[in-house]
Image (cartoon, rainbow, N blue to C red):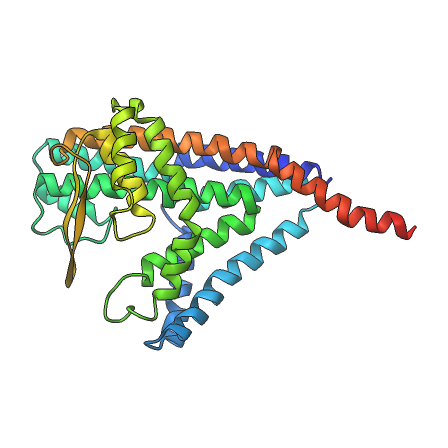
Length: 333
């Protein structure tokens, strides 16, 4: 039965990805939204403007989903079909690839139609910038940057963590990433309290973000991009971004599309100036569909890697566990 666990995880990841591709996010009763409400209630009870309180908040808010995932994994260790169903449901819950591509497509349509009010209203579904004064190039830039970064956050990272750690990895990663979105920014309230959540999210995304950048470079032709240019821009600009991970994805996408990203970002009550990534003109509406295509191709490639992991490295790990624990029981007999 232990040998069936890697197969169940691989099947569950593939099935959950298919569900996200076909159905997208649940419109009502989304588990991630429910987690956000629970985390918000916990924050109101434990908040103090210091890092120890933030660390305790992060430990509980992430630890509970991980423990639930671990309990479900143990409960299904001899039931591969049930394991596959749970992993599929968890994968569908934490992925956001279809929604991300849909938002980019809708934004592109609004910009092509010249409907700036609709485009500004839509931007809130992608990022937290203040859209009130943004014109077409800035709205397009914000969309491309969000698609690039969230291809890692909402697709590649959950798939890779699901491959490595199964259901606990899926749930734990999504919990950490959701907390980062909630409290991991540099507002006066969260400047210290949110630091532990932000650092945990940075750590969990170190490998997925770089994998996303490399896959974006490799698959640039899917969006009529230049692979050599994407590689050159990624190598040159990826470490210029203040985030240790976002720049990996955004630089690769800038090179793939042949545009320049970065600049001044205005949020509600604060602004940040980001270094420029890439060469060429600012993004336009026509670039958004290309970005969505590259994002979809990267997600599919990440699924292939994630599904292969339990059947290759995962089997080796399982065999090592059997040798260590099974051998001990055999010698006792």
